[in-house]
Image (tube, rainbow, N blue to C red; front, side):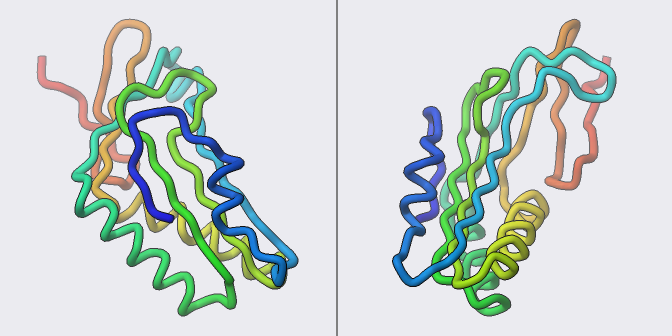
Length: 144
């Protein structure tokens, strides 16, 4: 399962998508909007994506994960639009025979998603907003 959605993500459904009776481990990563960043009070995040390319890159991450680790399944779901404080912007679930592979694969998947998937984040905070860009954590302050 690889998806870009414009609604709240059901983390249990993402985990269920990777369930398999032959596995002994399911690791789920849930990235949520926190109420602060860089000393600022965050009010919400907003995401945009190049949908077709984002899905293709998510699939490529999944293929890489399956080549590197003995996992059973992987699911990646990212939300676009406004994501309020405390809600999930991304959920990744990985199932495997053993926990070590599931943890490593999930960790790799979220790091790689942030590096290559064309999804952009705008951070709204008290007193302004900025795009957090290029999937590497660089900040793009708007010109004044």
